[in-house]
Length: 386
Image (cartoon, rainbow, N blue to C red; front, side, top):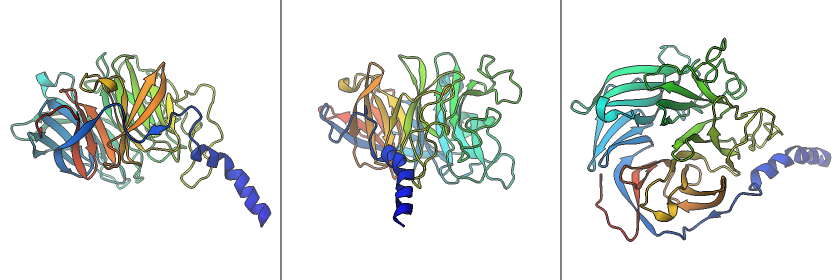
């Protein structure tokens, strides 16, 4: 009996160490912020799971509710937008991100990511990207157009992705998670899932995408080997696509998505299975990228932002990531391409689903079962509400 117990311990000990110990160069999380005094105020209340949001103006905001609602919020009031795609709500899936076209002021086009079943079969759903014209006279979407639909459908409820991001070259990026099929999709270029995709703004595939012309591959793929990206930004200084993604048990990552690169999932990882068993003993492999940063234990990363404004001078240039698991907003200070400091913001406020910098320069945070929260310095007074 003792021999059996010893064998089990020796088998699991590597993953126990991986999960229970922070990586050696991880800076410890600071529990109480000490660089800036701040307050927070609720500017849009009574939201369940505010998955995505984007600003139309300083006082107008579009918000997605995961359950399948698109909300137009202005000056504290909320109106539902109609004529949405049919949303397949299952597990982590539903109505996910929303983003305004870079020339929204001219064309009123928005983009949505949703879990859908466009095939009208009984095989579940997958992640889809749509464009539409936002009609604020009738509070509805016009010219709803399906731009990309991942296949095949599956009844699994996990790992749908997805954020929508634009670069400065006229491209749109979005993510699709591995859909709970880690041994099938992330490393296979002929399948959807576990990938970052790049499209032109009209939904067509750029001719210089890395796998264009290769037989049998999904030509919209930009990078692959991802698990479940739920935060993504275009870094304004480095001109790169940065994303965070859920690891399994341990090994949440920040990755810099580069053209045609493989980020390793599930062949390399710093995490283990939720049951405590090992996924792989490998954390490095030739031809596979290392994460810019990883969390062990996991924080359950969600939305992601980089602060560019001068509203909070000590925070300018820092990365902010929501924690679903521990219910706070994490501030990451980066120096010489390395995370040198971590800090908890809004500790225990609730499951932080999203964070964006508004056009007014303030940070806005989407919190489950609460609403949209604005962070303000203590020495500053601004009006309540949007």
